Length: 102
Image 1: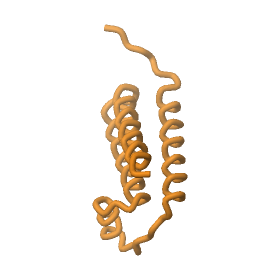
Image 2: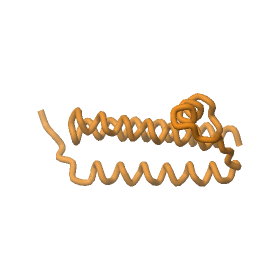
Image 3: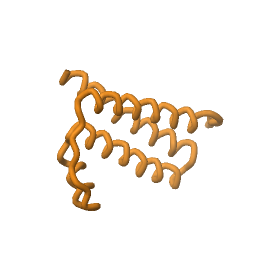
């Protein structure tokens, strides 16, 4: 199970980076910075799902929310849903991209 958790986390980090790169290409600087904020939100969510203490504590301290625990199955299903959402965002960003030539 630890390898599966690690693989899902690496995949989500990769997809978020890919999304940020596509946003800078398609929307320019403003869209890129907005996608960075969205990517951080997804990574904070991932960290909170798997019981990470770094980003989870930061959010809990900022908003005075009580901590919560997820089962491994719930965290796995939610992580897979997050992957699907990120793929859908990728599709929306790259749907009508014009390839620039030099």
